Length: 524
Ligand SMILES: Nc1ncnc2c1ncn2[C@@H]1O[C@H](COP(=O)(O)OP(=O)(O)OP(=O)(O)O)[C@@H](O)[C@H]1O
Ligand SMILES: [Mg+2]
Image 1 (tube, rainbow, N blue to C red):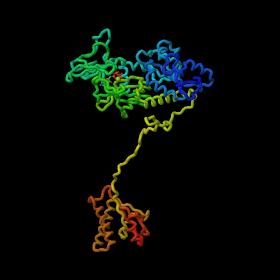
Image 2: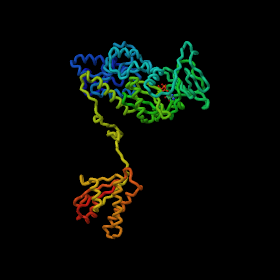
Image 3: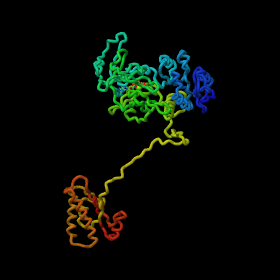
Image 4: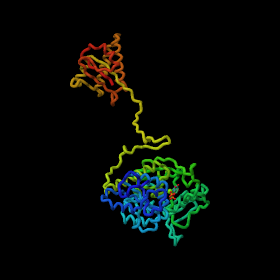
């Protein structure tokens, strides 16, 4: 991330990565950093707008902008020739008016604890950058009632739920009836086990109440503290202050599916142990939470697309509960990156860069076309050097079994066959197909008659002919009647008695070379 050129100049190889406004905020990236003001001042010296870089502003709390996934992804985003990244310092975000905030053409901004969303909204109104994640929708994401309302409006499956709103001044005036094993909220009954969630999405104190048959009490979930994410409580009655969502408990296999979208067409998913189980967080030898690989079904991918679009959050994390053969969305978190996945970092930066270029390149007069798959050579670093990664194998496979051909060829010379050939117009094309019951019956009659006549002979050629005629008779007599499409007779007229042969028949036919005017008769 070194920056040696004037930021006003267009790309010269080195990725650009700036921290806006105050240089002293910077840590790892500071050697090469310029303020955003310099970036734009320099730009004024340059006549052509086509020479200016597209500036992507990162406006969020420092904890997020300095996080490992963010750093990894921004490093990759900077590799786009025409993109420069400017991180808004937290101090500026919190303490400066928005007209003093860095300038940018595209804004990646999202709420987290302590973030002044109102200011970010004002900034977006003032500067009108391309928004990767819509800001106004982020108010809704902070309220589980709104999240569920939007999910419902979009026809996305979610657990059956009811909202219990409590007026803090009149805590007793609410539509809650509590029984030992159920609650009734606004007239809707939820049998235990059910889930109680604070309406504020930032409040992670979600409680799950157990039925008396399972020993009663409740599991109290909280934001992870070290190796714990929940604790059992003997308390069986629900909370009496605050507003909550009550919802049916979905019986999963004990894991949550975490989905991370980057635009409507990309979703990474992984499963983690549900905090609702025993509250002990599973960690690997490096202390990272254990994640299980997940393949999303086509339906789930569609859900990811719908969530991303409905909440207008390109980068969006949400939770799926797989239960009873369905997948239910139980939580939408908004902006969230996958942690510790190189593949995701690569994909995410590429998709974001492509979105920025697609949307802004035209107005910057930058020639840009969406990279094709061929340009996306899947080269990966491995322990034994860099190599091509096999991304998929496509095969079209057919089983090897097939019905054997049930086809017999024979030559016939008897005038009765010639008559038949003529009767059904065979001479017009030299070929005749007989499929009708009446026609097949006629062939059978001729065959029977010929066999009766051949009965006394012992000549070997006649014997061979006889066996074929017998075969023909057997086939035509099968099933006791002619129907359907299971038999047919083809006659081909060969004026010189030379049928086209398969090699195996060649030998036999050698003996008959001299025969003239023999229609060849095939029984299929
Ligand atoms: N209806 C439900 N049925 C079963 N388990 C549920 C249900 N709702 C939530 N859970 C469990 O409780 C956990 C916490 O719920 P949820 O994700 O809604 O809360 P949160 O505190 O907003 O989570 P996050 O930390 O992801 O923001 C889920 O990960 C899931 O394991
Ligand atoms: Mg959650």
